[in-house]
Length: 239
Image (tube, rainbow, N blue to C red; front, side, top):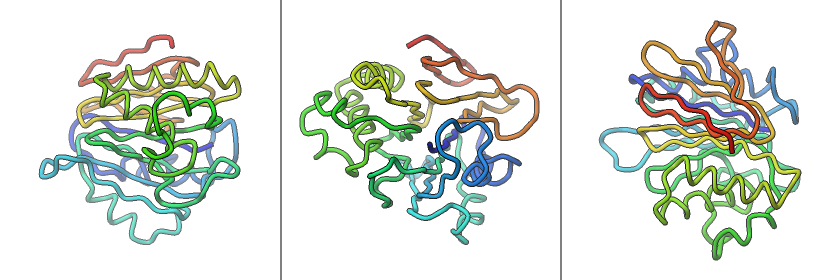
């Protein structure tokens, strides 16, 4: 459930992830090709990007299907950045459908999206007062809050993702914890229960739950792996 994608490289508009590619997130919202759980991602969408004029990233989130937002095409075409993260949501059963429950979640200069589900009991002891620190009561917001707390304690982006995923995944064997996060200069992602791909282009790297097009160059990230993209460097290591 859910699909997400990120860009790191030369400045590009958010539309490079949303509606420019044949199988961008707009199409993945109603016709995903690799999604293992659920068929439609109509419970909201969000985009986050970095602007040199701001210390923190900009976010645009809605709790409606992405195809219903008439303002999005124009916005996505001008929201240009060297680092962009976008997501479409299929809510976990019982979780609220609201903008605060929609990725990307944010803390300082970090953005994060969660593709999957996890029992919140598996997260509750990862940090003090996790519910009070989360943007929403949904499981994804709790995951994000746990990652952000590790970051505030000094962990780097990739290490924070890996730590939370392994700890939560060990406590909940049924958890699906595909996380995608960025800090403006790097992208990190985990594969734990669903698909993830990356593709290197001449001017950057795109990471996505599934290929945005049928062009060559897409590489699948193995299950239970951590992907890190920094500049031109792409690394994959087991979790």
